[in-house]
Amino acid sequence: MASSSNAIRVAVLPGDGIGREVMEPCLACLDVLAARAGSFSFEYETLEAGAGVFRDTGVALPDDVVKRAGKADVMLLGAMGLPEVRYEDGREITPQIELREIFDLFAGVRPVETFPGSPVPLKDPRAANLDFVLVRENTEGLFHSRMTTQITGDEEARETMLITRKATERLADFGFQLAERRKARGRGEGRVTCVDKANVFGAFAFMRKIFYERAARFPDIKADHWYVDAMALSLIRNPWNWDVMITENMFGDILSDAAAALMGGMGMAPSADIGDKHALFQPCHGTAPDIMGTGKANPTAMLLSGAMMLDWLGETNNDDALAEAGERLRQAVRSAFADGTLV
Image (cartoon, rainbow, N blue to C red):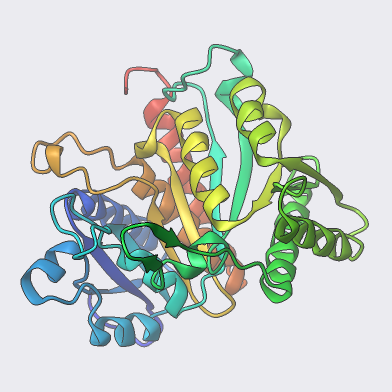
């Protein structure tokens, strides 16, 4: 797209595998929506990072890419990582995690929304109209020590979990504010659930205490808590019972994949990583190199991530046209699945 002074600057990181394939239709849809709205436009800058870049250069996330991404209004990511490209210690190449840390994208937002015709696995008819959101704390928890593993000989490996007041307060506030907005729009009952393991770990008891302290600031929103193992069970038995959930990094990582299954798989699940100043939007799925180039890659999660990006841009810029474009894209996806022929 041609540059313009009022264009929304989007840092596009297509990444690896099918990331590039699902990004292309998403950008095409965004341009159509912008043209129809007439009041906004997009300026894309494609930035290369990921496992392929690491394989070719030895650096997965170049400093210049970070600098350019930080200057954009928003980041849009396809998928990153390749199973055969890893660090020497066996860990996967995951620049998307580094971007969360660099830009302090503390809230990992994983909406779960199903609609008639979508490939949901549960037979209960209520599963066709799920609408809840899991918010994962992105910056600490068990992920905190991932780059500083302590290994003693060949006998022991140790990593530690970190829960801080600052991170918990802003995560809780984000969840309560999200529940307020959803309730105002007729979505959800106005409830936030803290998902933890406070019956075993003192760090989670600390997290829960802070959660209820923040809850007092939102008297119109219900606050409760569930243990993570009980929540895993509930997501399968009665996922329609939930509204907004907040949780620690690792628990959120696991539960968000279970939640994606409720939508029909990772190819249906969008996500956002949001901070105070920056935001990144990406599908929950991986790079699926086994189907790369076959035309089988499902762009749904990427399209819905684009809709989330439009929602966020509309909210942060107080622009109804952007918010309406996000809903228009979401409705287009729903319409595509409505007759039940897409699987």
